[in-house]
Image (cartoon, rainbow, N blue to C red; front, side, top):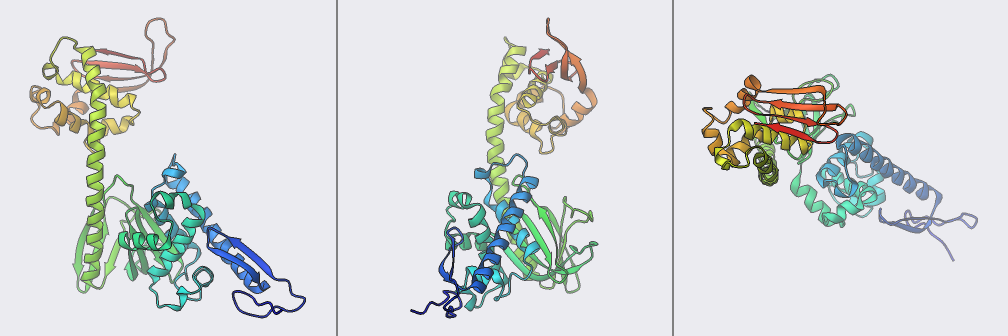
Length: 390
């Protein structure tokens, strides 16, 4: 009985040993392979596993304290695309070993670069992050393909300042909720711009001759310090990117507002307890603003929200708490506008760190203090024991 290779169809010689491969997650199952096809398939598997390892490494660098099971699918897709651009720059060739190995039937069809990118990203995540795909209902290729093509954009051979020295080069650009991945296919060099889930993308538009520019604000490329600049020769392409960025911003703003509302409600439960300790016999609305500030700072500190975050209030957290929960106390403070609170804290109040304190017979330990003209708090950092006075 003649034995033929399942991949190439070549008849195996009488003394030639047939080889097997079983890779369930990657969808590979062959019982009869010639040595050449066996070697080629193993090479493709090794390439996928190398990219899985890179995604895992980049994930640990990008998301500190990440939990495998809770990983955001958009971040994984973002990192998978980065790994593909870095390791397999010719991924869009129909005869690329990854495409011929994992999608032998599909390579006969006419495909876009984006199609090939989605195929390989799926194999990377299925091999290394199958439980995450399952949590999002994306175990099947059709489901994954629909999600990635619906929620992402791919631009082929536009221009951007992602060159090695920050120069303008022709580049492919992948855009998703987790960020942008730029790749100079000619020189094999890429750059990424990660956008965290609680940050919107700000940009500005300009137009010079037949060039339509979009410049990302607030973030720079690592290494050059330049704001990413994307240049299109067609306005409709730039409009497509603008529309997608606005979609991401709207989704993030809605989620952030919901999370912020829940956070403020939970924090205010503790803030009110602190205010009752300071002013047990007064109505909440009659308590001075200084005591409200001390109670808020104490609560934020005990919830392990960074002190610089408390002091700078980059998203207006402290102001939001006062505006939403203590508007009457603010009105009685004499400050004109809610934004004046930050100036009041900087000018009239003091954050004191790097000192030791003790309460009663306890040994002195590292402490943190916040002082206003009419109230103050001192908290021992290790024990969280607090002294407040108004």
